[in-house]
Image 1: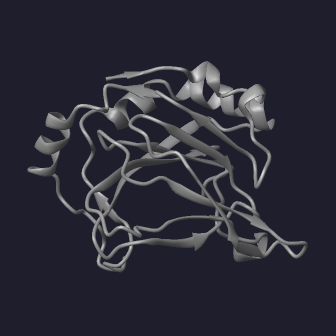
Image 2 (image 1 turned 60 degrees about the vertical axis):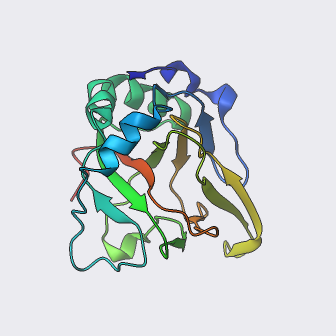
Image 3 (image 1 turned 180 degrees about the vertical axis):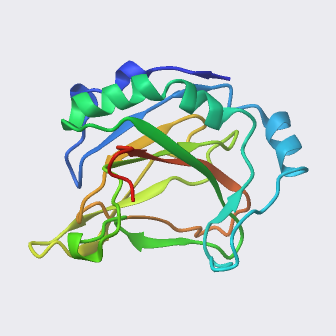
Length: 199
């Protein structure tokens, strides 16, 4: 597997509606290998804490070396992100998530108001790891009060190795509904952060 196309994280590929996001196809090559995925399913472990409901995404063990590939290139990825959004992120933190039958990721925006005193990562990324399309991420528009409009749903990402990168804000509403009750939809989810600001 090869991490590539970091140069596609640029202003020219920035979509502003319904919120700032970038789609990079083939961000990681080689993820269309079905045998490799089947082998992973025979050995992976659910490492979720008991506080996480079983009806939502589960934290699972790393998918081969994808997390390492991202960390190895984090300086270049962070620089590209900073150039697009005028930020100062300097570290990528990754986890692996899986959604299976009976599980969904509800609509949310990953944003907390300052008074909650919770660190909000400026940018989040999702890399889709299944060897063929399973389902992507739903994104939503908002009304004049910055409330989500569920009827505005559009789906992005989902292909092997695709990166969905987005600027976190009170408008970045997204979800992952497993409408067809599929199993083992696997992603690498990452946060682009500033190490000095994380608390």
